[in-house]
Amino acid sequence: MKLVNFSTAAFGLSLVGAGIAAPTGSNDFKTQCLQFAPEKHLENVTRTRLDYLKPGTNLTYPDYPESCNAMEPSIIEQETCRIGLIIPTSNRSSIKFEAWFPKDWNGRYLATGNGGIGGCIQYYDVSYASNHGFATVASNNGHDGQAGISFLNNPDVTEDFAYRALHTETVSGKVLEKAFYGKKHNKSYYLGCSTGGRQGIAMAERYPENFDGIVAGSPAVDFNHLQSWSARFYTIVGSANSSDFIARETWSGLIHDEIMKQCDELDGVKDGIITDPSMCQFKPETLLCSKKQMEKKSYASKNATCLTPTQVEKVKQVFSPYYGADGELKYPSMQPGSEVLASKLMYNGQPFLYSKDWFRYAVWNDSSWDPASFNLTDLEAVDKVNPGGVQTWPKNFSGFQSAGGKMISYHGQQDALISSFNTPRLYDHIAKSMGLTYSDLEDFWRFFRIPGMDHCHGGPGASAFGQAGLVGTKEVPFTPERNVLAAMIAWVENGTAPDTITGTKFKDTDAKKGVEYTRKHCRYPLRSTYVGNGYDTTSEEMWACL
Image 1 (cartoon, rainbow, N blue to C red):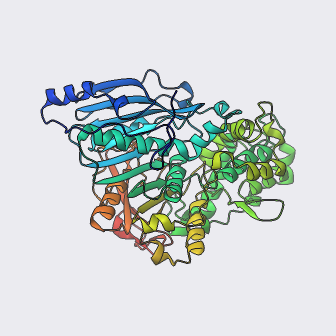
Image 2 (image 1 turned 180 degrees about the horizontal axis):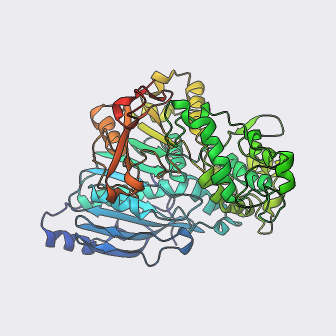
Image 3 (image 1 turned 90 degrees about the horizontal axis):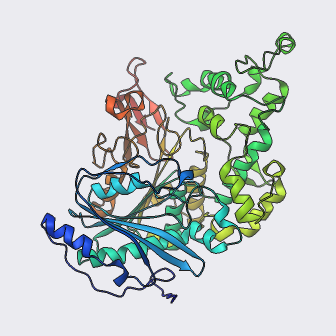
């Protein structure tokens, strides 16, 4: 196989053809789609699909990797040409790539990211963007599924995961877009959360001219330390059959209730939401069993009413920052308020899948590595290896700033997978390393904290604001005030930077049941503050950014 490498594209890619203009009629568009030959415009690629999708199509994904969890069908709202390719990134690695080109193209290009350690094309984001008229691209990030075994003894796959897959996806898609429509886009955008958020940050650092606007939500930056922090929870809470294991019901009941008792009303409203977890100094010792309770073993069941001294210490460790042997902070603490979901994902008495596979296959290349043995030696090893250059803790964004790029980040304040304290830490780090005030940094990067939001979406707060195709896609207006992607467009194309992002809270977190309330989310370091009379707690006017 001939492999080509050149400065403006990814490994194995070359622009080899000119573009054609997109026709206007339905039959013409269908013909154009089915006659399009992507392999004429990119070298060394293998076509896997070329589909014309008509409006109203209920698109399913029967070949979706099982470990990615089931993907909901996509409703196609306009005529779309779906292109699938396998694109090599080295002589032993490749990406599965898709481009969705809508007939009613808005002249914009959008690349989507991934999640976890996957491995999984997020079709809800792809259909969301293409339905809004974006020429949209995606990839599997260099391997299939959420398991990490593909990293084993193959640093090229790890490098794809770290940054190369997205860059390849982006460059390839731009070549095909120009060939398909006969002209290049007006502006280029990126949308991603979690690992997708980290990918967006990595693009701003490594390839500052790839995108005019980047939406990087809940970014999994400082990635190796994030995986170390996640691995550490299993060594703290222990296995589910250990004598002092804290049951999920205790975390989501007794402990969560006490956290809410101590911290819910710090913002002046009792609503089941800790608006700013950094203000919550939770004291778990208030749950310590009395002598009588110890005799009755009131701690021993799922309906526990107190905690043993050992359990109290476990809770303290869970909510403590993670330090290295040198006393340096490696990762901030888990924020109070996340425990209902975190007890299912992180404190469940089993090793966390992502960190287990990361250390087994990317760090140690040893499938027998035992996550119960995790210690500071593993932390030192992952720092030394930094598989694929994945760490993503930039010193500055000077290239992105000089290129005129804009970036919006957001983070749910009860995220159970990535500490919501880490994005402010990154924002402060960049401000300091670039010698910028917050006002200066806001010229090209704005960060919004989202009270009551879980990981990337969901939760009891006003957590729907157009950040993904998962929830409220139709119910949330595509306006700069209500939709973060629309806000990014307004900033890039009109120079109107967002001061707030208004989130929507649906009744029972179900968009079909209608809107319960909306709330403006504040740009960091401002804090959402209740300024009402104590009666009306949901009206937007009762909250201010102070």
